[in-house]
Amino acid sequence: MLPGPIYVYGCPQCGHYFARGSIASGNTFGSRLYSDGKRISPMLPDFSELTRCESCHKIFKIRDARKIGSYDFWKQPEERFANVNSAEELEIADYFEAIRQGIPENKDEEHKLRREIWWAYNDRMRNDGQIFSDDQDEILWKENLEILLDLLDQNKPAEHLMMAEIQRNLGDFEACMNLLKTFDHPDLSWVKDIMTGECRRGNRWVVEVR
Image (cartoon, rainbow, N blue to C red; front, side):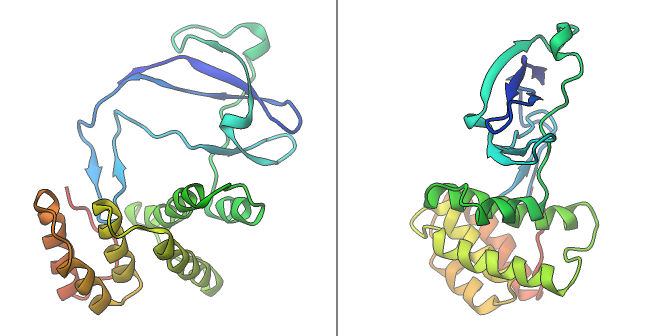
């Protein structure tokens, strides 16, 4: 991985500075792919599209922030950027707050945000933790998956598999198997086979597939 410039932005609400890294080049060497469609690549990290201002605490899209300047990853920043902190990483509660605030402007943006919530819950399991903090947390998780299901397009192979995976996560193995039976994309048949096996074993939860 070759880091790109560090970009400095101003919060669209209060103007407070924050920094965000970039990638000049990367690769998927050592990456891990999971049954929910998430790929974790140490040499090609993802950068969130949302953040929360550490000063005014507003959640916003980074694309709506004003770009102030940039500096080379390998060099000391100029004095005005010396104490600028990195963009805040959002937690699950923040994502739900973003939805309540109407930050997603269309179905595609809502789909991406609800998928991030799904992945964030599954990250708890990927990190060997407990998926739910309490009963209310589980209710929110389930509601999010049910809404996400309606936002997915079965005609798109990756989303078809996500629909099956969501049904498996919800414990509806019959619905998952029915979706997998109608999945006819030879290049992804190996994923279908893994998910079918997990259904037959009665496993609801995310698994590593590659």
